[in-house]
Amino acid sequence: MKQLALDIGLFAGPTLDNFVVGPNEAALKHLVLWAGSQSKASTRSPVPTYLWGASGSGKTHLLKAVREALREQGARVGWLDASLHEPPAFNDSWAALLMDEVHLYNAEQQHMAFNWFVNAQTHHRWVLAAGELPPADLKLREDLRTRLGWGHVFALQVLSEPERRAVLRQAADARGVFLGDEVMDFMLTRFSRDLGSLMQLLVQLDGYALQTKRAITIPLIRSMLEDA
Image (cartoon, rainbow, N blue to C red; front, side, top):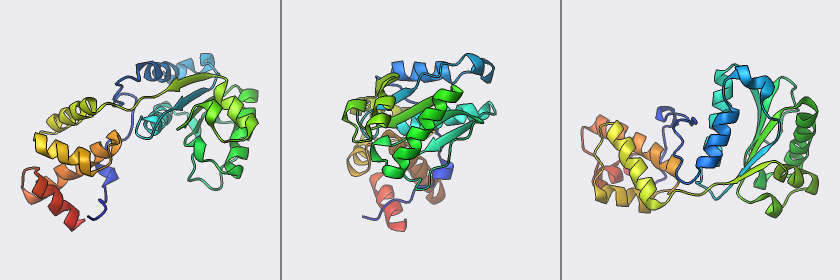
């Protein structure tokens, strides 16, 4: 089976509004409250926030959603994830510092993340970080690990299969697309069960169905994979 090439450009980017909250309401409320209007910037708490949970629990979605919310207010933010092998130096124009995939940071990334924390404290900037492990279990330098854990910490839970099915059904209905139970079963067993990936798959299936003027069925999915 060929690897599906997803057209990310057709997929609505992560926002706080389109985050499927499931059992993660407390974390979402905390981020919505913090990332409110820029007029509250002077009263925002600089206490850091750390999100942890398994892959697919929504960590990256929430970090990118906060980044987008702040950008819409005209604020600049610092971003660091494990793919950035030359992390940027701290910039005092940043309103917040966002660090994703901290459990994967190499020595240079850990050094820069610690530097960001020190500067964030000096300049009263907020740090929002995320990783797959709770702070106590992170295999990072001790000074960085302890800073990740001293503020607000939220454990994110992956949506259950019924919740993922309900979200997919709702998204399909919103696009005017019918997903039969057998198609839903196929999507959940043959592809990544991460909700973000499933939503992107739905977008591509909808586009392919429109292009070929066919309903979304298992044969259509197989055909799309062969054409990918």
